Image 1 (cartoon, rainbow, N blue to C red):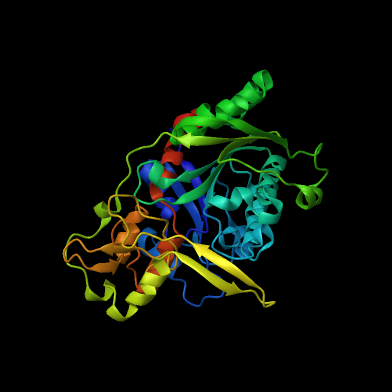
Image 2 (cartoon, rainbow, N blue to C red):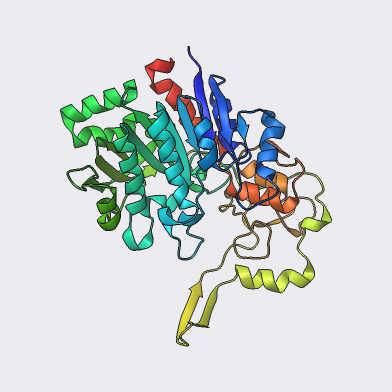
Length: 411
């Protein structure tokens, strides 16, 4: 019954670690890194060490510098920065953008350390980024894993489909090295039954479908290669690769199988259940003078806009619930939460019936964090920002629980 030595990259305020530790005390984080570039105050790192302790192995440095000190480990985890993939950012540059290039830091670590397992999280549109060359970025990531001897599973998970309080869609990736029994069993099945084995791994047998069971799948699928026979090198793949990937898939020995799956839904937590029960400070309530802005931001729009060249086009946008329904899971929480705008949540207060924004504690609950987790000295604005960047802890817990169940090495 061995422990699993974990290295945590882009640790934020510790969501991945909380998920690991909720899954099993056999996950031991032996090194962690969190660093926000261009910032004097490192609030997320300060929050992390306030909960997990100051240590020479809790490092606040640029990963490009810090990676040389990473110890040998069994599992590499991280929610690698996603701004360049985010659908909310116009003209996103994908893997070539300033934050997207951080993938290559992960790639360097994999080349040197070759951990047995890797679990990563990113935005849902990672699998189809960039828009002008669909699937290129994810194919580059898969090719990197292939070149280092890994098989990969991925799923785009909506946390609310699996019992959580937020409709937060994220791409989760798990990779396992060819020295693991997981890889060897999967490879053997692919040798015997080919594409059927790859489908079963994506839909039934793999870590992802065991952690997040499916109800059904579509008939159409992708069968694609990213190996040297198809693309001589990474440069040629980067220039011409274009593939529409579905929300579930696997990669084994340079071959990709992908299929659209429907979740086997678990009862979600309604937004009303996570709201604070007692009296809420007056500053969270909507101000009368801001109401026209809120009504406009949340309302449907059919407006003439002007392009830079002077030409006119019609801008259309549907209405957003105002206030948000307390009987459904929340919409995705963003880093701009509570600022007057379309994406911020507005709820009817349980005590007064008046409209207000979410409190920091309620935002922590939406991601499954303990109350006041981020109340460690940072500003309230930064608390919202950190939760907008965080992941849903329960999703990590499910994957990490299944990893221990699935690999005989850790049983």
